[in-house]
Length: 93
Image (cartoon, rainbow, N blue to C red; front, side, top):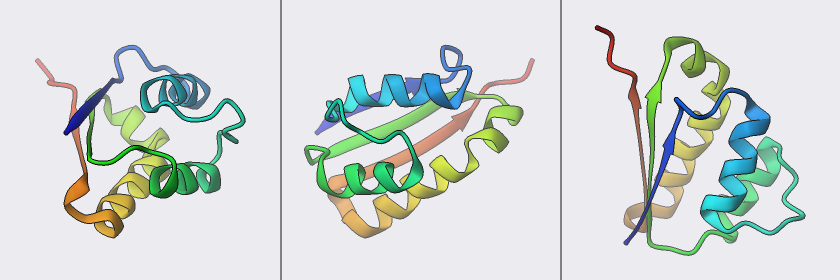
């Protein structure tokens, strides 16, 4: 199973996220960089099986990326065992 990790210490904006997403998941260059395009790509363009992790999310990023996180969770429910998704908050010291 391919494993893809998005480190949110290196992702500042939603635009940054989509640039990295296209590269890491091998999405087509014409990817629309919006929630509808994200759903279509996750459920149709991404090679399965795949395991995706979002790591080092701050509380502010958790709020900023709430819709994207929800969409990844929905894709995991829809696609079953071939698509797993987890996210982890940045440790607070």
